[in-house]
Image (cartoon, rainbow, N blue to C red):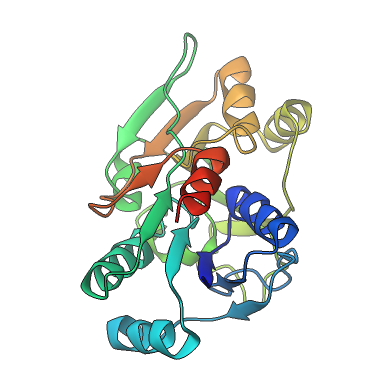
Length: 242
């Protein structure tokens, strides 16, 4: 058996460590969105595969016999492509899809279908904290009536694309106390976030609840029609059963 782990999340790190400890032949794959990613403990490739055909060729050339997809819930194009090619080639595939967040008492959430819909919610002059990453920043071009702050892991390699915004560099995880202090210092009125789920990234939502900050929650995109598990333990049990 040789397993391909599509990585980039905390779950992927945990799966990679377990595979290495078990001595299961595996390779991790990262899209390359972060300049200095954490080591996975497995042989790791970085970058795309070149579409469906390129991915199919890679699976065949490397002798991949199973795929664990532990990418971000919003990397849906990668997941859909991977599930499709694996089905065509009869390669076992499982997606680790963590459960999404649900609002609690005191939360001021408004669900939106996409980034472009946020502008209609935000009043003139509001301070908007974008916790959605730099890759989709261009989709907020219609938020010219607000002050934008976009947090990203890596120092910016180019100016902020809009005159009404700026970057803020920070590497997670962040505590609730850190997020609360940050939002207070910046005077944040709105938090924009993707429903990634998981405990690690939830601190900003707790801080927003405590401060009465409104949240624009971007709903999850469609996921592949394929086997899904919600935890690392379930994924590893699936691997053990191959």
